[in-house]
Image (cartoon, rainbow, N blue to C red; front, side):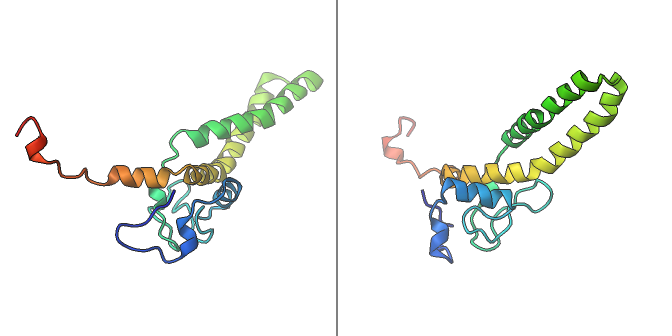
Length: 152
């Protein structure tokens, strides 16, 4: 699927093509535009830029919503819960020690993983054609022929 700003040809022909999945995921993980690999995906910690500064791809149309937190919790849980269970079985520390150690560790790990995972989700969405679909949905509907409508 291709995207183009309305009436303006893209500055680089390569930016028109949908990137391959693994390339888009890797670019997103590294905070790079999934289309060109040069511009940044984020303007802040998690705010997606409205458009790429290099190829002008409308990245702001790619709304990741709840997917990045879900994947982050899923991965952090699968990384840390086996460690928690191993420590409990091996050393049997008191519950307060578990809370002092594991709660901050989970919070830090999730905070560090959330941004790259959201970038990867934005890259994934770019390969699925969400930019073109959102652009088409944002266009005003064509003017209806009043002669053919029943309310004319």
